[in-house]
Image (cartoon, rainbow, N blue to C red; front, side, top):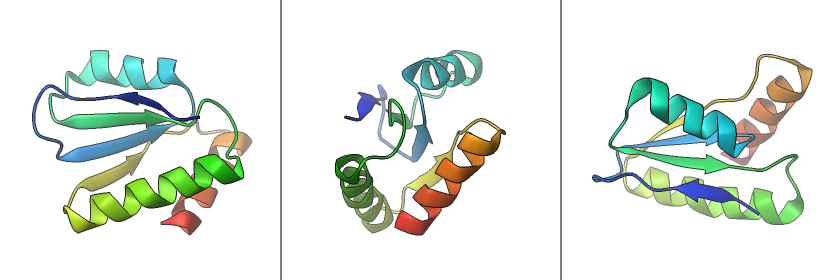
Length: 87
C-alpha cells in the first residue's frame, strides 16, 4: 500500500515517490512544511493506482501542486509515465 508522511502545516504540495526513504530524504533536504509525501513502496499495483487516482483527484479539487520524485532510471521513468497517465 501507500506510505504517507503528513506535513505539519496546510497541504500545498503533494510529492509522490517510489520508496519512503526517498520521501524522507527529500523532506530532510528541503524542510518543506506544507508537502504531503506519498510513496508507492514499489511498483504500481491496481490497488495503488486506484488510491493514487483518488488522491490526485482530491489534489486537483484543492489546487494542490503535484510533483513526482522518481529516480532517473528506466524504472523511475516508467513509474513517472504511469502516474502521469493516471493523472
